[in-house]
Length: 453
Image (cartoon, rainbow, N blue to C red; front, side, top):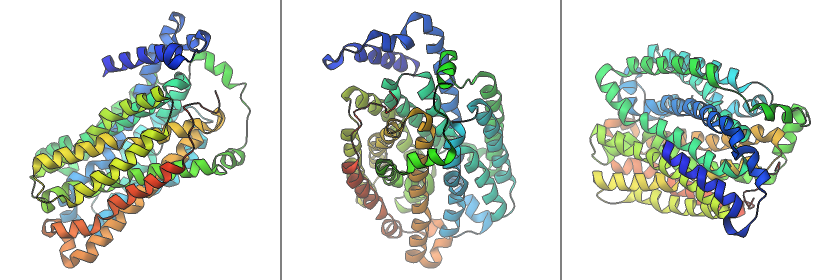
């Protein structure tokens, strides 16, 4: 990845100076790219990389229960609706905290925030792994959700502080990509770990990783380069209510956020809820093949996220990538649900292709950074993240209820569900992508120009 980052770094530097005949003053980019600031260049990648690593790890903890589905269901005697509620408990604090998170990262030290939240995630994993009831397990999931609320917003906020605006699409894609790699690690690798030590000890291993990460975050994170600290003192200080008013009164903020949510919806259902179970019991794949196939969604995101961000930056446009992503979502989600006689290889192809083309979500986050002035950028990112996750989280229990409705008593044992049961509930996938397409057509083009530039 370091080689690819260096390549994109060089391309972006040249593009801003020469591409499309647009002459941009060397002084604008020189402030960041000249040799005098080489330390900032390198250390900026370290700072952003550690914050993105926290996002990666939180995503791993977030999706880990999908490969523990059968064992958790047996331990707690859950139906599919009950399991949907357990997984969705992560999103209750995650969603409710997004606006407070945005306001917080615009005002307090991100270094302290990320260090504490990494420790909170470790605690949540321990509570979940040691739980003896559904209530205790849900509390553990809620602790993880509370801390995870800070992950993506902090990483992208640091990107706006350490890198020039022309790299925001690329960095939004990279950040989202690392999150998706975390999700992929939460599928097949965690599946193997669970098979070796059980789901409870697996959660304790994950908790230890977060304790180690907290030490690294405390040691290396800096909120912004020294010259930016002086500039930040010149920004206007506005109240929390005014920050909210600026962000929430923008119609485009709402349209862009709901686009991200409905585009993300199928991933929330397949990737974070019931994908492995669907492929194993509905399509006949083996346990590990089903987990690997689901992980391919996130691997596709990881590859395409930075590329789509770079393409969008290169085009100087956001909407074409967003529209293309939604169109592909409609086609591919329909095939994932209704393709006849899906074997292992076809599952791999379809899920990987879906992940590759679903990265319009990352572009929506780049748009969120471009809609408002710098002193409310954190709030804008957080609001977009809140709405997008709210939509995905809302669809999860709906799918669980539909499975309960169509499967009846069989919904208490995922192994007895049929392909028809899954397909009846999964009709929501292409519908969600269709809504995203409509919203993409309504998004106003920012031309990759931040309001604060």
